[in-house]
Image (cartoon, rainbow, N blue to C red; front, side):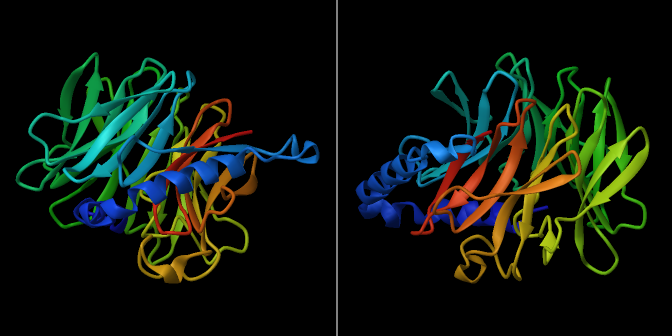
Length: 321
């Protein structure tokens, strides 16, 4: 179930040591970016504000979800590998499942429960729930790989799994019971988040090889595409997206052909975050970003994600309306 986004974080983990000499420059650049984010004129007072998020000492930082209290979860890459993090009241706490070779948080609810997936020493991926400091493994029955992506305030969990035929399906886990989710006619379905009313959001792949967003409400599917995009929820970037209790969705679209992955210069300028609210789409790009992914949204419509700067370095971000 490895996707290009996660494969790249592995390569980044191996390359962090080689980039140590650029550390001071990178820190200075992050400061410049933050300063630029704060230079809004009075005429732009109503425009969204952006804040960079960088885990201390990390070579790359991703922000993936935010709850109603403003707590944010994500992951970072350093010389020892891939780790999770929680930011609460401005303070970072690392998240590492004991014995795992990589830990990747995906979602957080109002109570601070965190879900995600980890890689075992045998390189198999399993979902996890972190509640009250205790990790619990989540595996869809008979699945080859499992990812837990989102958790609502009731503790219902959304995610996706790979079956024995290497096909990906979404799922929800409610009151200990798994239910598979497959968009009608699709050949691939992911479920990213489930909100408090039971809506589920994710993406699917049609038989022509095109990705689309979907929202599942009371058993009815809706499909969405960013207007004029070459592709919505493109394969290399969009394995994580957000859904809030208002039904708003965040993810990513490509304005040009999204060749390769986020480290490929051919995609620079072609990959943007998106917000869909009330049927209206809005593009998301932090100032100076070469590419942007939107991963999580709360009910205040604060959005978190990751962007690439002019030097190809990944930073998390917080977008506030």
